[in-house]
Length: 164
Ligand SMILES: Cc1cc2nc3c(=O)[nH]c(=O)nc-3n(C[C@H](O)[C@H](O)[C@H](O)COP(=O)(O)OP(=O)(O)OC[C@H]3O[C@@H](n4cnc5c(N)ncnc54)[C@H](O)[C@@H]3O)c2cc1C
Image (cartoon, rainbow, N blue to C red):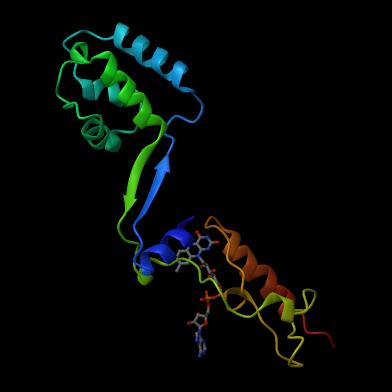
């Protein structure tokens, strides 16, 4: 998704992603959950405190802005229409993507030597005898979390086991 978003930004397209912040709950269950939270709160508690029970702290103010209901307003003042708007936004919050992180934050390179031109048992090039590849130089990119390092270690070990 990130790759598609970056390509679209480079092509000067407007990019936004829509995120369901409550994927485990359908709209009906979510409205019931909100009603229950409100029933358990004091009438003079703020809307932000209700939101805090539903989303991570950093999302409270942006979410209140989206609902168009000030975060420091009493929760008892929330109308049915506003509750419904909150549910709709929780089920499909729109995040405009304005930019992407610069190259110095890059973790892995996409592209490189085509794996179909590499012997997967020895890492030797199928085009140039005696030429071996390992790690980043190959056209493999995985999620962060150790997979790229595993690629580097495994292909490095294979490439290092030169056949006599
Ligand atoms: C900030 C950051 C965070 C990352 N986090 C993760 C992560 O959490 N999990 C994960 O799996 N992967 C992560 N990676 C990716 C992972 O580190 C790399 O995929 C992996 O190190 C690649 O190993 P490599 O040996 O192929 O290449 P490199 O580690 O890049 O090694 C290449 C070496 O070649 C040397 N070199 C370059 N040119 C020459 C030359 N002409 N002559 C001699 N030597 C040369 C370089 O100095 C370097 O030491 C991260 C990468 C970065 C940058």
